[in-house]
Length: 172
Image 1 (cartoon, rainbow, N blue to C red):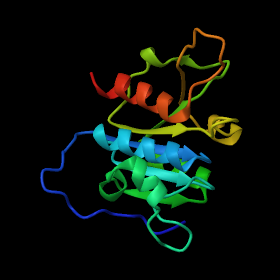
Image 2 (image 1 turned 90 degrees about the vertical axis):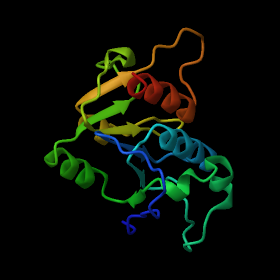
Image 3 (image 1 turned 90 degrees about the horizontal axis):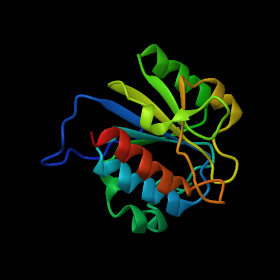
Image 4 (image 1 turned 120 degrees about the horizontal axis):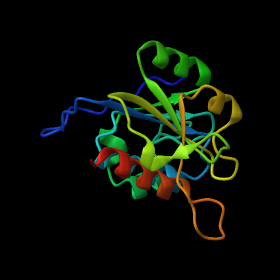
């Protein structure tokens, strides 16, 4: 686990009563990650956890990733983030702190995302572009939310799905 990244305090930063965090589960595309950072920052997400091989704003040598920054447009500089190796350990710790864990995923026991109401403390898990949220993390969730699809395609791009889900839940 890398040291948590804490951006400098921002003048005019928004204060919120909730603590909503994102967990990016092995997302492969640096562009998807940058887009998620940008969307998350606009909605006041408090922290992003990048798990396993998910790209982070810093490369493996500790240098800023210009490819991620190009898409995130500065959100990576103001939104706290952390690289995580022990996925289940983090989830267990957050549950002890009172967090509800929600996965955005297609599953037999999922509920329509429009029926989900987030408590003040929530961790939202977003899965890898092809295989989705890993089964071990699905087992650790409290709620599995799904965006119903009407076309022939079976899934949405992870950054698009994130935007739809977060705006529905947080812009009420």
